Image 1: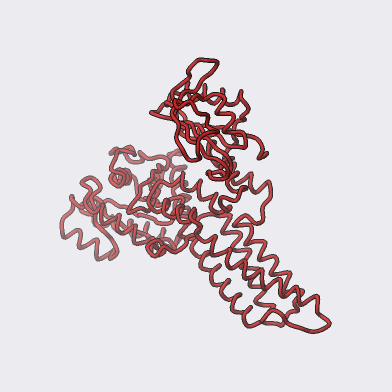
Image 2 (image 1 turned 30 degrees about the vertical axis):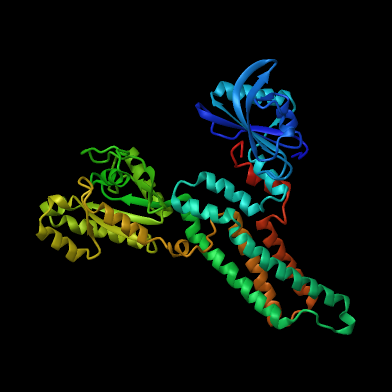
Length: 465
């Protein structure tokens, strides 16, 4: 990427809308826009103060393309840390493209995905972890993912890591200074203070690493598999949870022959509900593939809902034995997964049948997906499986796999430093492990980068951001 080039892209979503924003950034951005913009005030953008709005027309060879509002950002006082202009025009796709093509003809080039944010990083407006949070913020679709992204954009754990990295770097410098005076046998780095710092860093890294377990599923949505025999109401339950007719509901057994997924935010937490094919013996090859996929979806899920039809037990109590066996199979195959056992169609069974089911399955909960009885309680139960304490306490939560891998590597190096201190390792060998830990710290915040890393990160951004 060449920073002396001026780039342009549509910053708002493509398509028709009330307004659209065309973003221009680079050293010639103000001059290029001045060449096609005629202000109502008669002044050029160069003559205007930074952070002002100017009303005027975009002109192409004396022809007015559109009446627009232009925002001017001079010097480094912009999102990208370089001169920038944003043109708010009417939201016609034709007008958008006319303005963009006009800017390109006057010296701009089309921006690459994420190039505006990459420039913000390269110009020191944000560190790498903050830049990555921009993409997370755009993708956030519930209150929790939004909160996490905002926290990271404000600096999040990056400021904490920078402080620890600086302290570690200071000790590394003192230890390496000792090597220059090895013959005098002097000690510049206080080993007791260094031990305290190592312990502090290890504790911080462990907390951040542990937070990834919840952060990763919150970012992607917590997968919940709804499983059970055919025609017990799994699709009806999914529709009740989503409050819409998302899945096909039919009295014909085996209607759902593939998994159906949809998302729902419950108290700010995203859940991905997966309505799977029913589990039963079948000679239908297509349905058999669906049942195989059911077990795959259970394996991928964080929570399992086992649903059965209570009305079948009403007519034949021996049916409950088969249900208990199915539940035992799930518990045996997936012993560490939270399992919610729901008896559906409670409105069609007697109190005596409920008592009988409760005796055999003490953990069972009764619902009616058709009438939505018990659905709110089910949502509360799902929330209870999520450790939201960190969110309420504003603790840092890691959601980025790249950060997680770098933190793991940094902790491994700090553990080696700890082992070195315990065994009285010489300063030159300690310095090697410290430098490796510093490298992994730098990977997160951007002190250590390469073109391939930046390409992978910003290549996933949308064009215009």
